[in-house]
Length: 90
Image (cartoon, rainbow, N blue to C red; front, side, top):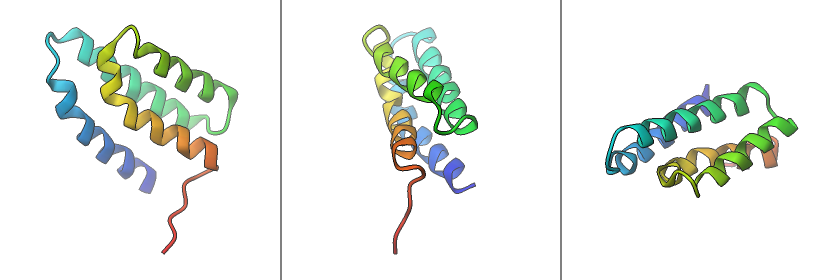
């Protein structure tokens, strides 16, 4: 549940930047793509598919600049995957 709350907070931080984009299709596409990849990363943890999806999402920034606004969410998932679960000390 803690990871879900973390992701929700990151999404709420990313949304204002995403809303600054002109048009409606590109920001919605970027949002849905990032949330889908993030959800799949949580459903299928520590798999090759997760890394491929995260890499493709990063590459999508070149085609869809609005996707860059959602990168903090995807970076959170990448760090989670790399560390086998982020741990908080203290």
